[in-house]
Amino acid sequence: MTDQPRQEYDIEEIKRRLPFVELMVIEGIEMRRSGANYVACCPFHGERSPSFTVHAARPTHGHCYGCGWDGDIFDFWQARHDVGLGGALSSLASLASVPAFIRSGNKSTRHKVPQMTERADERQEKPPLPRMRALKKEEIVALAKLRELSAEGVAAAAEARRVGFCMWPQFQDRHEGGAWRPFHDAGGCWVVTDGERSVAQFRRLDGRAFIAADGHEIKAWTKGSPRWPLGAAEMGDRAAVLLVEGGADMLAAYHFLWMFRRLDRVAVVSMLGGSSRISEAALPYFRRKRVRIMMDEDLPKAVPGHPEKPPVYPGREAAARWTEQLSDAGAAVETFSLDGLTRNDGERVKDLNDLAVVDESAWLDGELKAAFFDFDF
Ligand SMILES: [Zn+2]
Image (cartoon, rainbow, N blue to C red; front, side, top):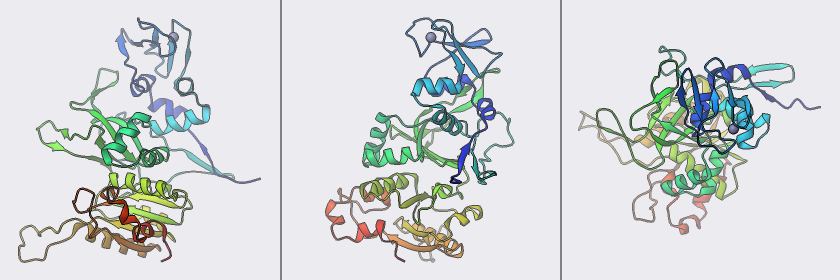
């Protein structure tokens, strides 16, 4: 008998956090108000007038008066995605941001990971993060094209649940007692995040920026703690870690690890920005790991207000800061510099995503490849 850890879920909590109507919206099925209830055209039989109903008195349940379909969100997910109860549980727990209990032997513990604290003081029922779903095949292809990566690499990140889809910015307020209302200029986004939704970064799938209410453009939105390294809690028993700075760099890391078949041996962790220190709570995950920091090669920046001071290199400063923290935490750390590499279009390589568009010949001398595979330090 093994004491393989098993994941268990709080079913009532998932149902409470993910009302049937919200799940329908996530699935792209628009529901409209009909008296106190919500109705839609039934996704299980062809019809032109809506008979699929969610009753106000029973928000966790759907019923179709046309074909007789009847069930809760778990039944719905199984029927729609052709998966078993286990698959429905893990997908809906993730959508509802309800962490699993890990049961091993007779112990049952929840992952001890900081929870999203954004707007915790506002109305409690507000979703801490928008509902996300897995990327569809065509979205994986579009994202790969946008970032100049392989669809297989992006698919590997999606399969590891490091990247998903949602509309963002998603909610501004709630209709009286009903669903949350979309924010202006919401767009379909690719979201990089972790299993516990400690931190997430949103960017538009169409490559556009978001236009804020005051008219300025926002390229990416990060929610949650930027100190929490995305993927830290999901390294598993992999001995080696690629630590990258941005969300797109994380996709690029999956792209390379897929390309050279090292996904089962090397974990990917992203800081989603260069300015923060690693959360103290996350440092134990790095103990005894071999961590290679893929350093961003930013151009030097003058110190504001101090023209006499030497310019700073933000990527190098970040790498030095994380190296110190990780070494103190018991990790072996090495930094890999992208300095001196050139993209296909002649631009200098600034980050790992740029490395996906260097000339193939750059890989031939073995040095670049070694950056991903040699962890003998
Ligand atoms: Zn029906």
